[in-house]
Length: 620
Image (tube, rainbow, N blue to C red; front, side):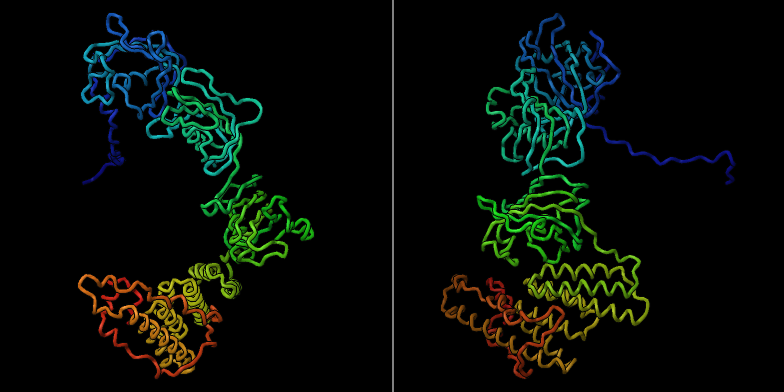
């Protein structure tokens, strides 16, 4: 079919209609003539409230002949406290749900409602007060006092916030931050309960119940220098030093100006390692914090946590005024020190309170620091340099950078800092995902280096007790190169540690077949397998001694001794083993001395022993 030039039409995609809310469905059921409005006093401006706005109004309900049925005003028997609702959130009668969004601020209007648009509505979500004439046609007089965009803090609308002035930044206080704020508390009818607008701002520790729960929830959504009113109902008015008497208060309005808060971090979650920011830095947390492998420059002052706060080192005094420079992730400073510096931004000053095990118990201790001492460091992060970007570097330079990082990992391994060493090897392996060798020679160098890094990672896993991960890492090398004897050796050691002796012996025997020069190391490993297997068998014999004398149902009582005690002993003679696979210090034995399968393994199936809760027995 020919299409004329003028016949071309643009077909717009059909927009999926949004499913109406329950309130919208209720409003659609309002029949003509059931809800009428008359303006008694015009309001100001042209803005009207909409969903997510909090509306504040007084109401008086009358019969058609003028008898007052109910009111929020004190002169008609009410409490004198305006009603607060959040449109789209609060449960309201459908007549007000439809009528209030038509009102201006300051307006007074009379709504004439038939029963089906107030409490007589089918399935009305609001329960009518006792003795309320819900089957009568009524007049609802509404005075719109105020409305504003509301921040709903609690789902039950017990805590709602009105922002007066926007704050600075994005960070909000949370436990265990220290907070300073001007706070004034008023009842719902405007009576002042507490005023703190002179002298010093109120200081409190967030999360310590030093202010009412609802107030703290509201302040937890504020930023520095923000001004807000926080509306809190009775269920969130807990007693506190700020407001000790809350009995009889149905609602309190807190006028708050958040002056400042100090970032306090519980680094371990148990209150032992605390970082307290005492001067803000430049930049945003955490985007401007130092990354792993950054070069950091800090000034610090170290103090003992005694009454005198004895200073044991100050870079500005004891280091000729020069800052300390160190690379993160290399174990060059105490663990607690580095953990906290990694969460600082440039020019920030922080006070760190540190327990001994994260200070100098596991790190070279200064001569004037007693053993087991709790430490305080006052740290200023002057700045840092990001790790070098490998993008655009040639292959030679990349391999030189990789070798530097690998050597650092080897040093950390020898210092028994296995997790830090593994992080260095992992970093290079991640970078290698973006390296593309250009010829066979580069490919060979690249492949050998990557295999070596995988084996170093496997060695770290082995020392960390994560033997299954060590085996998986060795498999990455063996999948590409099944005859890699170092990978077989490392995997065999991991198998031996977890008690998979047959698999371990298979790997060590394969080493001998592939490379006769590895026979001394492999036979030494086989001897160790034999010793461990005998130790386990001896313990199993002892544990299951007399098992056949047990009556039915008593098998579960046969021994409680853990038969897998050897797992942690495997490495006691391996501490000299380098992370790059040098195992020349191992003892030697001929391959012919490899142990035979024990009689107990033939008598007891592996699955049965595992079912008895003895995973170490599965190797028999």
